[in-house]
Length: 437
Image 1 (cartoon, rainbow, N blue to C red):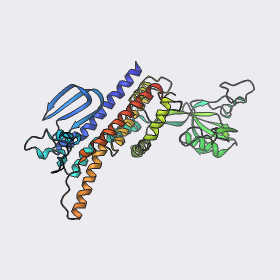
Image 2 (cartoon, rainbow, N blue to C red):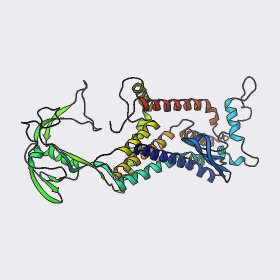
Image 3 (cartoon, one colour):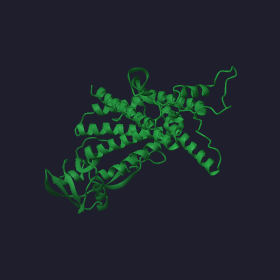
Image 4 (tube, one colour):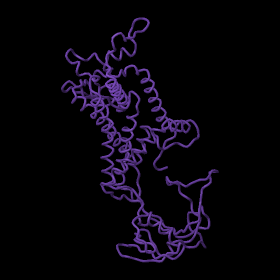
């Protein structure tokens, strides 16, 4: 039941994000006088609708997107430039052009989208993605300042009791020497305050102090049940794996784990939510943005990897999932149960999922291809450039860019997007990505 509730929570959050995205287009379009016959959330058959001030607001049966229908998205063809098929019927481009203009009543010609100035077109088309960016930033700010960011702390979560002679052993055997931390009297729940005279403020400080002090005796100050306690710890030199920048174990060219000799105590941290100051939010938004951009820029190769995993034996790339995968993440977050994973942690993870979704909507919609918002933005920028060049040359105004001529390429992009959605849905079913491994 918890799994289903989690899926529903993220589904509602995604629908609201889509609805607000379309509001980002709707409000400036109506403010600039564009005629907007429809504002719809979803596709397919209409479940509910109501017309207010000439705009039909509604919800459709498939909540997989939304749209704002603005009249006059394509300008009329120039005189003598109308093309027809061999049988005299209008081409696909001309049919689309006619459909875009057919709802313009006499005297409403000024309400067509193509008549907007370039800055106004940019405001309308950027409104949707910008709304997703704002949602992502606001949710991220609420998470890190209100609930906190998950991070390792200086409070001990585990204290290893021995140094097992068998590296694969999970329990201590007779004759195994005591681990330095346990031998010194450290306990789970102790909060490390200083190590060898060096004050510590987090787990990274603890590991750095251990490395700096080496294998010599170190006076370790901890808070135990609120009272200060000092113990003497003497680390031992053991072979430990080297971690890569992403936190995974580094491997060499042959695929073997890379290890090195390091001072070892046998203690582990707790993982807690730690509230961050508001000043940390812009940097976190930027890192979320750049990480998403990296995924989008490498999406073709990642999709190849997903296909190889879905139809072969390759490892699944966890950074690219479809709606089914997102739903699975939400369900797992809602149903996870364990010590230290309560309502705050569950809420933070669920909101973080919506942060990632909205940032993905922001970045993906800026790809300069029709029918994405980025395609219309690119068309408006090209129109502005052409008009500026014409002004420099004292030439006639070239008029609006005829994006209708890009319809064949648009249909190819739509087909590729549908193919991507089907591939991800299939991969999410046969080779799912799980948060719990």
